[in-house]
Image (cartoon, rainbow, N blue to C red; front, side, top):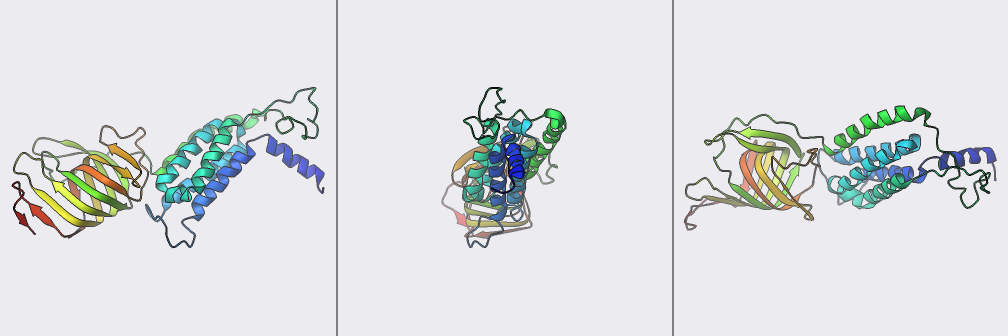
Length: 318
């Protein structure tokens, strides 16, 4: 075989770090990056032109490089990479059609479980690496640069994680328009937003005092089989439409929001029960949505088949 010294040096370098785990993370991140750029006729488009796919793909590739360059921090890197891989299912074309997500999960598991077996003095096969324990018969990598690498990881990977999934929710500005004392209930069989972001939590003014609400902002949204029912103490009013399209600067103020992500995972959010840290990944659509809507604003609202009913359920008006 040619280049014996180069091959020996490469073998030694490969065996002193979780090489295959880093390679799987690099491949998984590359697959997540390439899926939105591929000439497929059926694609899942989300966020601002698939920025979530780019962010998570680059973060997974960075995690793979960290496993190669800073193997002493493989536990920390693998946990962050596993979180990103799982989030990619909801945020990036079903995890790159499950391929990128699977590679990321496998690489994270291999990186977390990787260990170095110290060389034994009487262990045969340690010289050429072909014995029973040759694959791991290398000394523990020198921790000379471990301190600097861990500091870089402690700062860099959380930033990459939060940037990839949208970052924590911030306190949003208060709504200028007063809302009903009791928010009406809204149901829809399909909620498909575009450019979705969780702006944070704010207080909406009502006749009974301020009301805490989540603020969801998006560039557009489409709701199928829309139903709204008032609960403000007076005669019940119902508003329904076959479809409702909102565009422009769309802002939803919700006191409760539940639905099934991609029609698979059902979740419920309130201003007081947002996950900690309150990171909400972008999503393509939600089904079976049931929410309490304090207020909604948009530049343009188009309703198809709009109907209004009074409390006796007999009157109807266009």
